[in-house]
Length: 434
Image 1 (cartoon, rainbow, N blue to C red):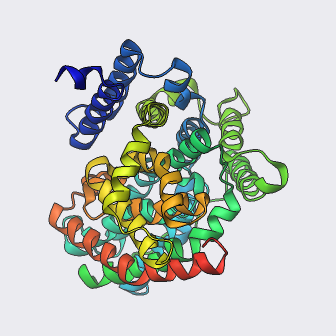
Image 2: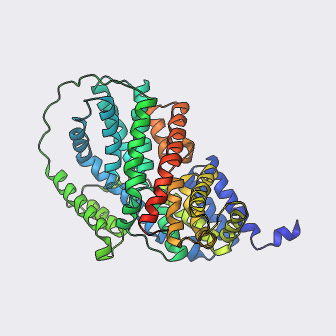
Image 3: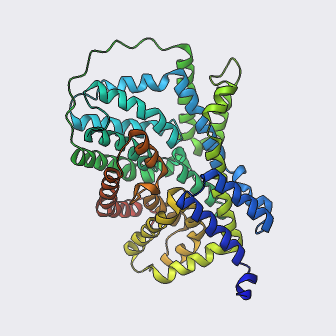
């Protein structure tokens, strides 16, 4: 035992396992676990302070913070309600159309609101009001379908948009710190949106309509929308500018995080902005930001201590990775991330997987960037709801029973493996990624 205690990886390993275990079991709130990790890592001095706290300097931390601020502004001005009301006028033709529009709205908002939790908090009451308008009451099976469409649409489809969810930002921050690779908005969107976004969205609509059938009644008469207020117009213009700058990042070189941060600062300016200091304090979830910094700090520990290399070697010994069988290797890498989801949840998977990417690259013969991108398929496809906290939040807000969430989760996972995965392999080859 004494030899284990003196091994250079013993205490870092204990710290990593303790942190992952607390996050996976939710014995403590996620941000408290992150603070405990920082405290123990500082006391034991497992890595230098600049590496341990590098998450606070990462683009992921600042983009999540900016997303919360922009979300407060969108809700306060009423711009989100106006957009949802305009779209809701098209939700009354059929059940397929209604579910499809809810999924489309959850995906469309991801382009302008980079916070899963913020989008769910915004969409759930809007979708509930629209459901009541067509005679669908909460607690019924059709309502469960709509609530799950919000949760799954918000989490799974947003994985195809780089700055739109937490795991993507964790991956971006980790690969930037570990391998010096900066992910760009438009190439990422081209790689993932056609299949992980559009095709999976279509499959999601089909499965929700099949598992949770409903029949919307003719809607009640609604009043014509009022003219846009000046604050709404100004915020809409700001969001449009942000989106354009994100899309054209390869031209100007300014990352999504810093564009989002600049926009967030504008929304906070006195007389010019939209969010007061009190609204910032009550509406911005600093706890999630600390959690993100903790995940990135964990990735730094894994990278600097060599734990990631050891884990990668262990997985290489049991996983069929072979340059002579590229499809098997491709599916195996997706399987590795899916397996990690069970004990790390989607937010934590990129922190460990990304640090092992170089080992996987050598074993498969795939380029390093390709290995990094493959993980998106796995961590965005949970097999159980608890593996993706936004889905759990949507189920809680909609009072959806666990069995209903598990049914859709498993069905979507099967469809992803059977239909989406082989097409993803072909798409990667077409784009020259393999």
